Length: 237
Ligand code: HEM
Image 1 (cartoon, rainbow, N blue to C red):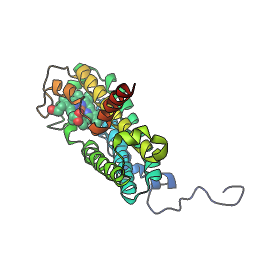
Image 2: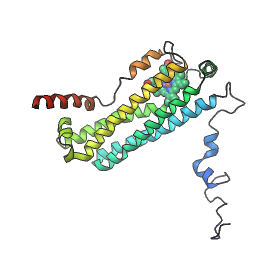
Image 3: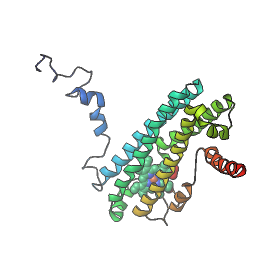
Image 4: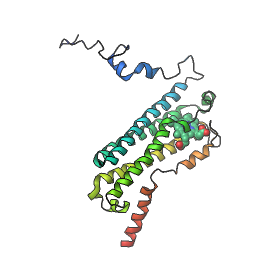
């Protein structure tokens, strides 16, 4: 019982867990999602599952916020869309940063874990799959809004102060592209370090293909407009 007479120790939310924290966060379910020691072929399975599962959660949040920003753009609430789009960038940063942890795996001992992955491969990651759908839709909503305002991309960049919110949306989009590329570079390097860069993955893809995927972007027009701006500036000089 607290000084105010309120009983903080007794949970008030529905559920069976002993505290409201555990009930709300659903820690029983969450912490049961990793294999236990009795199932491990190697204790680093915990590290491997934690990195993958938390990546899926950050990418889930990223997708949800990209979808919300898309909806806001479609509704014409560009200022709120610009605000909403900051969060997926952080999610992508966290997903990228935590790849470092995989470099703590011993390449030889990881081979034991690899044997129990079946055909499991990041190609089937729901987080990346949904984000790969959500980002192009965001691009469509952005260009539709830009056209509605009667702006070319060059207009938007040259006159950014007149269309500040839409400009910030564009800059967050290109930053998302950069983070996806940063993730791919890190992922490729981690894969090369753990299993090598001259082998084939659990779904038959040669690791060197991952190196080439690094070039992929979701918003090529936003990259191209930089070239146009440089050419325009040169022409005006
Ligand atoms: C030791 C850790 C890892 C290894 C050895 C590894 C290995 C690979 C390999 C070899 C591929 C090529 C496809 C195939 O399997 O044939 C691949 C693809 C992929 N992996 Fe991983 N991976 C690791 C960690 C992760 C993590 C933490 C994620 C996060 C979700 C992830 C997501 C992906 C994705 C999305 C692809 C598709 C290619 C792309 O979009 O760039 N991987 N991985």
